[in-house]
Length: 175
Image (cartoon, rainbow, N blue to C red):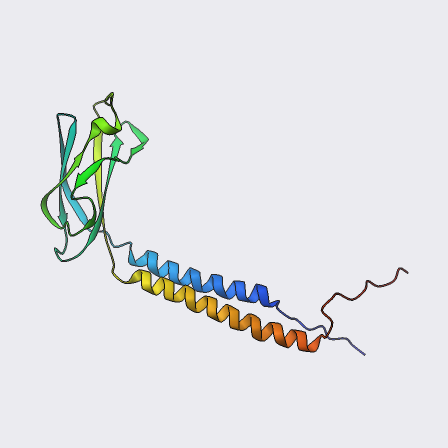
């Protein structure tokens, strides 16, 4: 008589796989929604009294919220990237679309001795802020947790009903 081996997926592994699949789907949708970049043009800067004034034009819908960030780079050293810490003005999250937007960087707070070099430039980036994407992410995670729990209860209880012992059988004898 041929013995047929049952293929059972352990409840913990199945629940974990289902949870990870749901989380990956939710996060990939959230990331793809936030990748909408608009055009930033006419980035110029001037240095006066220990402050750097960066101006830019953000082409986009004036009713749309954007996340604007500022990065200092160096032309002859591509690995040089600095994100200014003490900034104010039209930076962060807000409705910044339009012309002649400004960012003020207190350079003396970040670099008390100044920076040497002539080939610095600024990169201003703006991304649309999509409202409500976080609610979908948390709802997806909650649904995945509920499904994983219910699956574990159903699969775990049916497996225990078929096997009244909760311990492993003894190993086979030596030949």
